[in-house]
Image 1: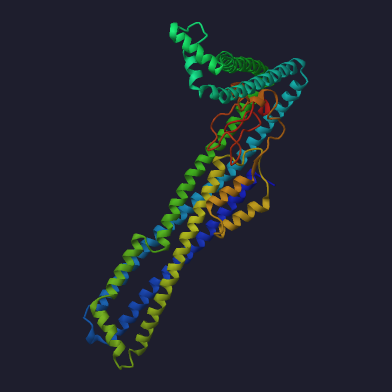
Image 2: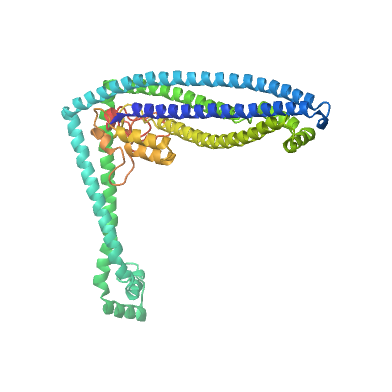
Length: 491
């Protein structure tokens, strides 16, 4: 088992490893791109040597055009190198700033833990004191008894309503009975006279209406009376809960718990502020890394211009013809130059293939890094490193991160695995103490009791009010991000 703070540190360390792997791929791409550019220059040198041997096949200014192209390409590449160096320094500065923010966040989490511990101790002491308070225990017993009665009344009302629905259907399916019932035969509002009354009486005797009418009337009357009684018992129970909650509030105020909650919330707000800055800097770093990818793959403006300028010069018709003629001539002087050009072509193809493979690997690597950073952000936003947060199996968390780095586990799978491992355990307080047992709503289906909901500031980033991935009530002082209880999660 590891703490939530340690788990996020593990994710952060894994992200650093992914970043280092991405840096290595960028360096490799830059090296391959440099080798490709060097080959272009080498090809230019070989062609100029051929031109000197076979002047008759070359225009008078062809060598000069190659020289000019190389000078221009060199100038563009110098500009590229300066821009790339400035970008690298900016990346280093942002990474250093992120490291400082992470250290500040770690220190702030320690302050938050201290504030949460102080609040938890105070709540536990208040619970202990109230557990020995005769007046409080008497009110608690009255509340529990009122709840029991309300629950029983609600169950009886529901049972009778179900019984009414099933038993009255037989009466309602009888057209003769319902004809007499709707005319209120035997009742005060019946207005039948003469032949109509005699015929109605005959029908009544035929279907046994008199006894059936009394039974049907009782079925219709009992369920509403029981529901009215259940509602009255619910109101009584809620009044008892209000009285118990008032004692809770008085005890909390007397023991200074609201002030401790405010102190805890201030520390949490400071963590949230750091998290916001981290999110902004991580977004900036991601953008800078995207820009560096352009330099590494030669897709920046200066690199493209340099390669295009040199390739244009090398593709001039005079040079193409020179190379073609040199390959078929029997002259010994240019045989070695032609062999070198052929070898250069082979090397160009090899480097192009390696660059394409490395670019594909880099794309996957950057995707994994981005997803891992999103997992880290999600864990922070859901406060999975708040005081009391734990992950059940340290080895399993490490294995999931390793599998993610290897591409054996995707982002959704990693998040799901972390959710299954995540637990929140308030240190000392009882979440069901006092009125806290009513925080999820009355068992008879009534309104949630407002006095038992935790004093959450409502600022939990992404936290739900239930358990699970980053949610749930925070026991000490009413909860981070929903749920929970007053004085330890239940007052």
